[in-house]
Length: 288
Image (tube, rainbow, N blue to C red; front, side, top):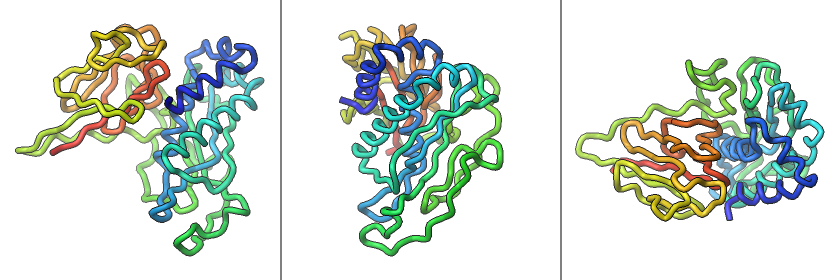
């Protein structure tokens, strides 16, 4: 069973269904959980061949209406999200420098239903020692709770990776603001002459090759790839391969989330995360 699926099942049992009422807004727990997973992936730092360190302190910024709605449950929700991050890290063989914490904060520049994630690596006193197999790296001073410059979505980890391009302060025309803390998708590269691009998706560790121009995902046995998930419609969405590849919702009940954003249509890149129901689908492509 996937990490996000387990997270949702645990959440369903909290506060006698209170969360079912709270999350009737656009923001859904599984979206935040998926954004935290991506934040770990984007900020993973390899210390040695046996240790990859990821952030352990996360801040989820919410619009004022969503924050007011969720603040009474922030403790329980933060604990559940922290548990989900711990499960995901174990699955990916990530390690932490200190205890995992997830905080909710209000952001007046966000509209209802939008959020973004910031993270940093905070070392506990017991983790300041060197990882096995190497000398102790110099520890940077603790970063402030909020970045000094606008648009800063992450804090540097203990051993900062190569610099990434700065996050835009505003979304592209037609896009949803907030950005969820993800870097912009890299522009797809056309296949080299004489080469052929291979496409596939991964669901719960199982690879499904895409051998035709289109691939339909759904709960029906007529779908090209069947997903046994009550939150998935019979014909939920369709992937079209090309330059670039795209995904489109087929009028499903619960919609699709691509790289942390609710949408009806989106461009896909290698590594894009697609959430349908409670199932996470990883899109892959490679030349050769």
